[in-house]
Structures are given as C-alpha cells and as structure tokens.
Picture 1: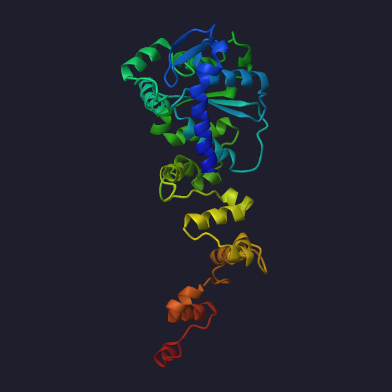
Picture 2: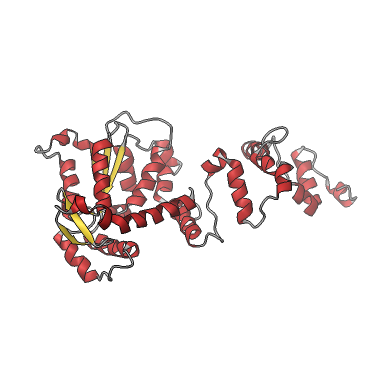
Length: 351
C-alpha cells in the first residue's frame, strides 16, 4: 500500500468536501436539504441523503458501472462492519485461483442501530469541516431519526436489501433471492465461525473437510498465532500513519513488483540510505536479486524450506552461529552426517 498516496487521497477527499457547496450549487438547488454531518448540508436525492460529491458518484455509477457475473458487492450502512467483511471476503475468495461461475453476489451486513449512530457520529466528527460549528450528539440523534444521514434513511437502506433476501415479488431484480445474503454484525461477533461458514457457502466456496482440519476457518475468524490476522495488520497500518518516522508498512506484493523502490525506501527509513557510490557498486541490484547464481534470498529460502521438509537430507546452518559457538554447530553437523562424536572423542578433545 502506498501510504503517501493514501494520505494524499484523503487530503483531496477533504478538499473536495470543502468545495461542494460552491461547485455544485446549480445541481442541488432543486433538492431538499438538511443540516449536514460533515458538510454544511446534506441533500435528498432519490429518497436518500448525500453530499453533492456523493451524488456525483451515484450518478457516475448509474451511468457507467456494469455488474459482472463474478462480482461480489458488499453493502452496509456506514460504520456497520464494512472493513471487517471486506477483509474476510478477500481472505477466502483468494484461497485458490478459481473463478466463481455463479451470478453476481451481494452481501448485506446489518449492525445494531444505536451502535451505528454513535460510531457514525465519532467518525463524521473527525471529518467535519473545521469552519462549521460543533455537532452535538443530540442534533445527530434528531437527524438520524428523521432519516437524514449519509446514505440514509437508515431503515430504508436496510429494508431494501432485506426484501431482496426474501424475494419480494414486486421487485424485478428478485428473481434470484439466493444472490443476496443478509448478515448481522452482532452475529459475526457472537459466533464468527457460523457466519464465515455461511458466507463461504454462499459464495460457492464452502470449506472442505481438509480446510476445516487445517484451521482455515479459525484463521479467517482470527484465531492465528500472535493475534487475529487483520487486527495484526491494521494495528501496524494505523501506527504507520500516526508515526511514519517509527513504523514503515511494506507489502510483499510491492516488494516482488519493484524491489529497488521498496529496498531504497526501507534503507532510508532505517536511516541508512544508499550512497551514490553504493548504487554504482550495485548494492541495490544485489538486494533486488541481480547477483551470481540466483537472487540471494531465493537461494537461501530454497534450502531453508528444504531443511524443514527433509531435515534428514538438508541441514541449515549460519556463519554467525558457527563463529559464536562452533562446538555446537560442529556437533550438530557430525550428527547430521551420521558420524556423531563418541564420548572418547569428546574427552580427547577431537571436537
């Protein structure tokens, strides 16, 4: 992930909000408006409430977005577990490279109303334009109950998808109610394995007996070493945004795609940027893997993996361990070669 790009995108997003009322005045003059959560006003467009920028996005989506049979659409009211479910869906849809052959799938996640309200208030307060007056929870509550909230009314948003799951006959798109799955945030917290299993089955990717034995479901749930997988990642990602001098977040994919950029970034972060002389002498190229025999880490990892898979055939030692404690390494090597030192040899100092 390009953190600087992400930060710039957020800045541009905030700037766009600030320009909404000026640049979109013609578009919104005919629309009903109410006090806004982030901007000065929210505008009612086709029964739901948006900022002018969001209205433009909706119009563009309606004009240009074409659903593909392999698409999965995750739908939630804001602050209802969207990030959590995006991570989960990505996790088990990428267990193997196969592509779904079924029609487009929609997952809707519902969250307890009061929790959505409070979470939205905290979130929107952080994004609210600084020049606007404070936004007390009492005002938020009144607007929310009236249906005036981003992408609201809240219950219309939910019930639209709930009806889809029931297959209401008055809606032309409901010929395939099995294409919409309705889950709740609370059920996910209470019994994640049941929800994850249901979600995987809905996608046509049910967990096999082997995957269940190997703990794939538990991994998706978060029961892995150290801490839940996505909590582990997001903790460091947030830290990298708050303290970029202390935490650097890199991705395996970026490293494979452009090693020199990542290695240069890493060296600079560690306070050890490559000098012009080092660049000329090929230090960066070596780190990238352009050296004799094969890329350095591929060379090492190939043997390291072999030592784990076939410990009787491959032994993995380090130069540093050999310098630090040669007797331990030599004893280990002799045993590996089927020539362990006898007690007599040890007494006589052969080692």
